[in-house]
Image (cartoon, rainbow over all chains, first blue to last red; front, side, top):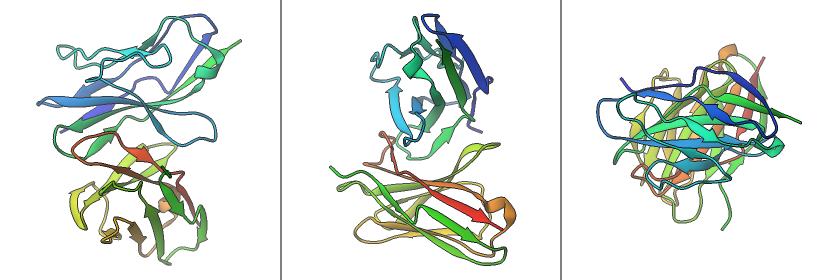
Length: 109
Length: 112
């Protein structure tokens, strides 16, 4: 069965430090993977998706099919990055999304 | 383009009652998905509608149902409410086919 795991509920780093939010998935086929972010008092929004291979707000994520991971990384965290981050998987050509339980990132000044 | 809207934003009900939540998708989006968000479980997929048909369904009891109208607006109904149904209910719209989902602000349901 499809499953997305985010092992850290809370991640605290200092401003300027590197950050890595972990995401592992289980799916036997070719998944579509996403990172969504929810800032305080804002709605959930897409941060990036693996097929676009973009860097958004300095964040990147690489799909590692061997390790079934899609970790989110940023070399230098900023205070405005503090938010809730969700990793999500969708089955290609289907519109059913599986979300992880989320990681709260707290960037300290 | 107007975003996804959900009404009402807050609801307080008592056990045993039923509730209907509404979602208006982004214009042109024919897919509407519903999620339940709780602190302990995160986001859990309820169901997805596309062109008035339920295409995907999560693992929720039959008390949770939905429908979609010809204008793509969607409603979700929960009957015989239980305390554990207290949650934020999110609606998301998309073009379908695994494309990006755009989320609404949610409806906060409290069951007393």
